[in-house]
Image (cartoon, rainbow, N blue to C red; front, side, top):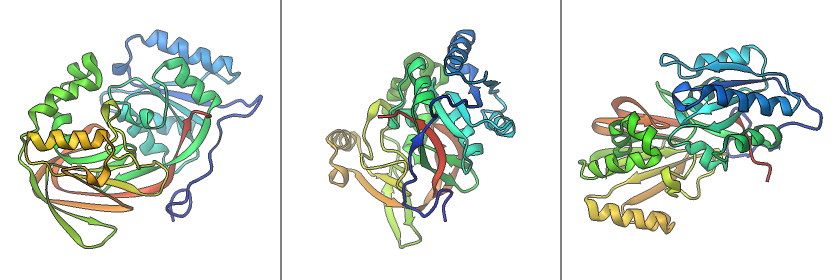
Length: 316
């Protein structure tokens, strides 16, 4: 049984607040992702005050704690809503504490990728994203969990994608946004493929030579690239992409197929769907969770937690 009921059964979407309702809230903010903290505080506090809600708690992340302790403190204070002002890494940290609870998470995109926000249709504009938190709906979505590493809301990856993420300097991401990944991605295109085996839901092992294996909760990548266009964050499953291009020409064909939404007809791409995924490689491979690099290893084992996280989404 999942956090929200039977696997694959979508939980109902509800209004974030009724007429005249007041909501006890908190802000978890990553200072490294915000240029003017005072201005952001005025924006957020003003929007909450205009809704007639009490002043929110203000909790700043630190290099030592990317948001877990702040989310824990907010929950201990009995808040009903946590506004997360940061990137996917900050969201992941907050979600790791709030998954399995009824505390809602509102995304205020402030990082490089903001892939969960993009996939949920959350606007990048601060005022508009705060409006979603106040007047939008609450939707239960799945999260993925990787053995020994924690949860992810977007995707876990092993191979090329993790190497690309690890090679992209923070300074480049701050300056160029998601486009910063392009240069490091190009440098890693000739990276040697790995021998991997993949098992879905405890079935037979699939043997592949792969550049990357992605286990995803949502389908769009940086720049809106629809790698897994059928992926839904509340379907009780994880979507798996196995990338097998051998050279630059194969990568170009793969990119074209993805843009044209050819799915499994895309050259160099296989996709699957499962509730649990095991990936084993012949050598240590770089790995990442929601754009944060984790320790290289020969294995990545993930499972879905259906309906574990409540998020605020646009009303329409």
